[in-house]
Length: 110
Image: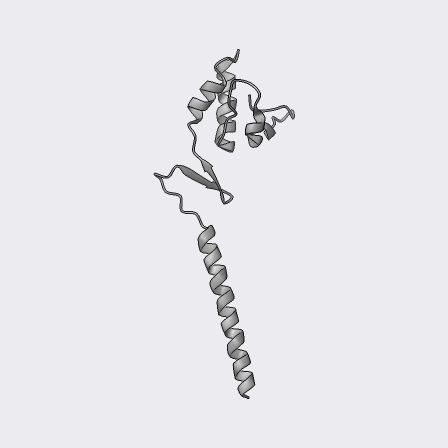
């Protein structure tokens, strides 16, 4: 009888520890987005907020069709939270930016 009581107590203690551990992990993975914060949480990945207008103006300054370039770049910047450096190429610096495609399966981002 005493062995049974000890076994039940051990199981309850183990269950309480597992639940406490799961609660602790969930509390650590939840992200509170503060309005004054300079990071954004997407899928538990932190991205530094960037000024898309400035980054796209820099990227599109040599484009022949600046308005088209700027519009596409801003869309990509808002989705990926990055813009490759320079005015052309360097897309390896921002893989998300390089992966976005149009409906015609052409690169979306300039």
